[in-house]
Length: 578
Ligand code: AMP
Image (cartoon, helix red, strand yellow):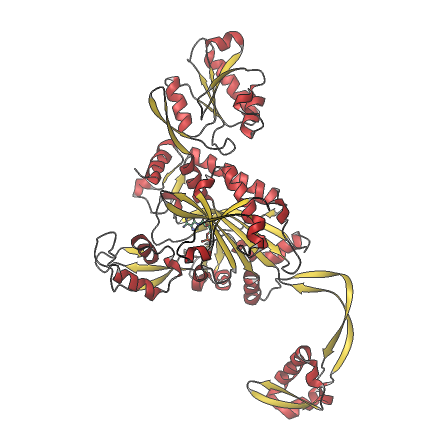
């Protein structure tokens, strides 16, 4: 069994995740998180919120999943959010053309190639339909838009789309959100929520699905002035796989500190470098194995149209690299597009420290001259004069000035333009913020964390499977077991479980089956500590506490147990310290 298959089997058996709606045959790309998975997901989301919202001092919002069509016209998704599709001429199955090329050749990023080239590669490599094994040579490679369309209200006059990323719900509301931030840059707005993509071929359980949770941060900055607090993460080591290394024969990964990566120009944007540093620590915290992790820079052809510097955090599972987070410097692309399409103001007024006095050239053309002289073009000539005065005041030095309107030159005596240069006082200017975006896929992080946590060893001569999840992420922190359901042991165990829950710990109470089986069940869902109440506990007020990874056991008093377990779970105390 591959690593992924082994995980999917455990995930279903123990309640992490399983395919949805299977009573009706299911629908590919939709998964339900069971009790363990939902708890793990919520712990990972909490850890994300803690790091990217609370610790950074950002705001969090929750926008709708469905947004009207003009939003996606402006964002470019309606026109360009496509993947390459190829349909089998024999069985009609559809496939992601670039993935077929990647699976059957040495090419790693076929997505960045033009459709015709992918079509040629399919023919040249004799690639077949994975469903019926008929050759796909000469089948056209087309674009397929990934957005799910719906109608808002009855009828079809108001199309809407399930959002393909949570980000647009932030960008569209920028004017309002900027007010909440008192129009002071920099500020960040985060969102954890669902995103929907009608993927051509969902695969690898949680890795490529059609409905998934994103945790995205849009950090709005003044590109001229704002700098990230790089010193906070400058010594963090980044495993980098740059575009240059990917393109060279012998290039491999480089281990550089955040500071070195910036100084050597490997990571172009200091803001992106800052978030790579922050995120390296965060991935480690949630249980990603950093020996199976890298940051890969986008190749020039792969970069989204709006992004200037782009890196993906990738984790390795089953020998494949999976993009778990995208880090992009998006410039002012999104806010400009929404300003252009909506006509609203997507800028921030930046107050100068001191008002400044500047010379401003203006015109106030005499329309009683321009009208008779230029007829229907008079207004356009006046506008052109105004623009010219602003752009090149020297053009008004002579007696006459010439402007072009629709390719035709018009000459105007300067005295009819009322040209003047005046001193004006300015208190500030309107600027369009730039955006730095870390965009996390929560499901892929869950998949990675579980795959990397999956361990086997031998205990009492039997193979054991356990998940070495960090206690902060584990769905359950403590399993509580009465040795037997008699002589008051169950009552005492149940009281202890209640006390631990009251102290805020996540507790599972289990009284069924042999103790060894109960331990195995908790091991398989990654519960870091188990507490067993036996006959002696009734006498001496002590219980057995067992640690998951080592299976080591210690006797501890019931008194103060909650406090100790809590300190173990937060890393304040180690099992050896007990
Ligand atoms: P993107 O906007 O494509 O860079 O996606 C941002 C993040 O969302 C990725 O890094 C993934 O973690 C996640 N993601 C994107 N597409 C999917 C998908 N189909 N299934 C699961 N996660 C996804």
